[in-house]
Length: 126
Image (cartoon, rainbow, N blue to C red):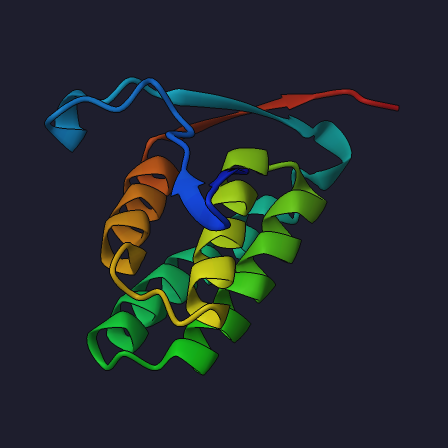
């Protein structure tokens, strides 16, 4: 979710719930199809690993690997209904493909904070 200004992406704040201190951050409620309930523990475990790996890739400035990993996170998150997580990953993917590394660390922290503060609500969607 980017707005274009002079053909350069302008990052958009995705979650207004962020506060200065992550411990005070409001929980982000995400409604997930109840049919996926058995799959969510593995999904969340995999995303924790991805977020940790992403930080290492940012530290080493491996933009192609960052693009690949954020593409994977974007797709997995949207498939399971975690749309804000997917949007953050999409921003990171675009920046890394455009060799614009300056904002990646901040977005990785936003992704981590967002993920840590998700409150999943399983709802019937069929």
